Image (cartoon, rainbow, N blue to C red; front, top):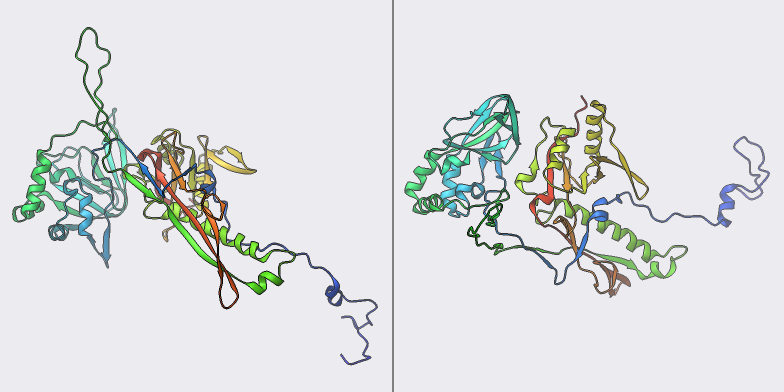
Amino acid sequence: MSVGEEVRTESGKPQQSLGTAAARNLATTTKSAPQMQEISSRWLLRNLPWVDVQGGTYRVNRRLTYAVGDGRITFVKTGDRVEVIPAELGELPALRSYEDEEVLAELAQRCRQREFAPGEVIASFGSGSEEAYLLAHGRVEKVGTGPYGDDQVLGVLADGAYFGDQALLDADAIWEYTARADTACTVLVLSRQDVEQVAERAESLGEHLRRLRAIPEQRTNKYGEKVVDLAAGHAGEQDIPHTFVDYDARPREYELSIAQTVLRIHSRVADLYNQPMNQTEQQLRLTVEALKERQEHELVNNREFGLLHNCEYDQRLQPHDGVPSPDDLDELLSRRRGTKMLLAHPRAISAIGRELNKRGLVPETIDVGGNRIPTWRGVPIYPCNKIPVTEARTSSIIAMRLGEQDQGVIGLRQSGLPDEIEPSLSVRFMGINEQAIIKYLVTAYYSAAVLVPDALGVLENVEIGRWR
């Protein structure tokens, strides 16, 4: 605009007052603090009972147990061919602690791949058992006969499970239930004949199997712990049994994990641009938020101590119809006493709501810090977006008993760190480099421990995309 040119409005009329664009040069702008989409509710971090750990390690002492084969088997898929990883055969009770890799590789090669259609019977109740089945993909129902002659589903097996393994040690083994394919299944079959043929040539395997057959069956309770001999209801001068409680000689130890980053801020920014908000404080605040999000992710997904990977095999359940029905939630709660919380992805909670709607059920809600949280049987169902959702639109639901007093799940941390801003979270000044950049080391130490196996349960492979 040239000097003396008249300012006009959009309608073409002369401007009669100061415009807003020019006026803003003299105005004070009101600003928000920096916002961050990654911040979530983090209910797991809020609700875990945190235990201070001295020396960075927490040891979980338990009674000695004789239970074996409590893991899952991993497979490798190449095209339509499925193979078992040889070392994974050690999860079978008959091959537990056997470590000859060459022999395990030969056994893995002898596993035959078979396909079963939905509804097809894999093994029938009462028939002789001569083969062990390794379930690479699909769902298998264990069906028994109820007290009134009808069929009862005793359990559901999914990817990585095995069944019929007693046939590898016992030539007289029979099937105590009917195994029926619930979906299309891919199964690897290892026969007792193949194992015996390999054992004839491999002396180490033959000795291993003979030793297992010779070991007398240990008297254990239903949890696999050595029985404490007691006398009750007797009269007179009956001999009272002697006993002791044996401990696990190699208890598990949880070492604190770590999440760290180095925050860098130019001294010019920290000196000149601190009004109305402190730049260093805001940078630290957002960095700590990101660190806490990663901390919760690790507590759920870390392979060493994460909840999804530390759940015992017998505490993992499969939904009977794929979707998270009220019946499945009841089964999940029935596996442990005093369940304090359920964790589920928000989409899984939505799927739970759809199943309840189909049955005309309205879940109760409770107020937690001003938030309405749905419950099932009085147990709150907290959202947790760190629980993964697979490409097949399946997820998991976690159930936990909490606290040391209840032999539950606990969080581990070490408070009293130098330059600590929160328990087990510190911000340490690292100096200023030649480019005048200030550096801070932001560190969080954490882990989680499951005190007894039934403190943690998981409902796996929950379908969250079915609407009918």
